Length: 156
Image 1 (tube, rainbow, N blue to C red):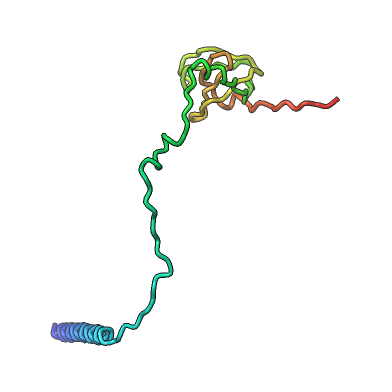
Image 2 (image 1 turned 120 degrees about the horizontal axis):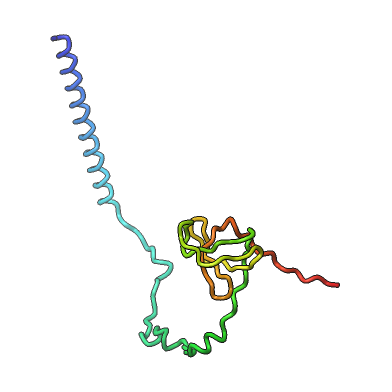
């Protein structure tokens, strides 16, 4: 047992002494650096190369509502300027069941024939909300539609 205690005591004492020596050395160094910094004359004629200054703005000048002209249009004028949506997809199957919601269990609201043109409005987990162009809207599975081909005018 004594052969284990003696080495442990020696190791502990060496560790404590080395810690004390490290602390004393660090303290001494810090004091000397502080003394040198305090005794060194500061000779600096540095001036800033620029000074940032913000000009004062009048609150009325910052009021955007006064500077932007707002024109009100009655609802009738808005309806006249609406453009009919362009068809983006065609029905790729013989008959497409359009449903009330984006799931197979949702009730069928109407059906479309193959080749019918529709506009995709929204997408949700593989289902798309479509507009058939005549005010009828509903959900269809996106794999049953294909992008509409753009018509190219031919020159004869």
